[in-house]
Image (cartoon, rainbow, N blue to C red):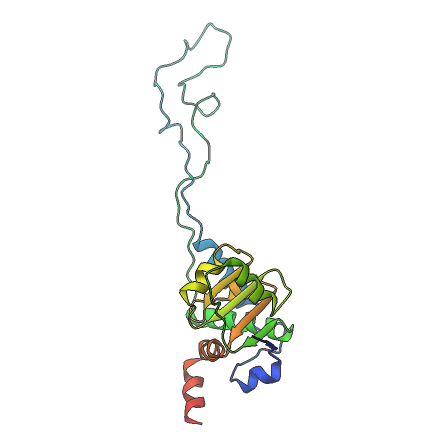
Length: 214
């Protein structure tokens, strides 16, 4: 199994719309990755206010004559075991992102990696036995990078079993690959079939129809 570096010229020949302008697509990429990370937040952090904390409503001591500041209840935030002021409560952190913005972000991330020479093309990627050592050897034969993303249309069950214990290498299908996956790695290994799918995913539908007619 051998790999070749995907150049900008080869990418354009494979109908990938590479973004050469460094500034184009940066805002879309930022918004998309922020949305991905926000959508993974559980938003389950919760504290109790003075109204919900468990405790008696009894006045702790009399109003006058003690020389102390007057106190109305034991669940006051200034007392130990009392409520929390402005503490977190369950909330939804999710953000919506337009599909055109996501498409542009994917295109930008892929273009940046192609320009940097970090995308490698292989015919296919599968291992013969569900053994982690064989999986590591197969990856090392293609690249010396530590963090590697492997994109393919499908993976055999043996490949999934072999790679699940090697966290620096991530297996992702061409339809599930997103902009964050592409940026959060040192090298990207893409099969030829997956490259065609990525090319279709990064081009606008109307331009896809025009290319098909041409």
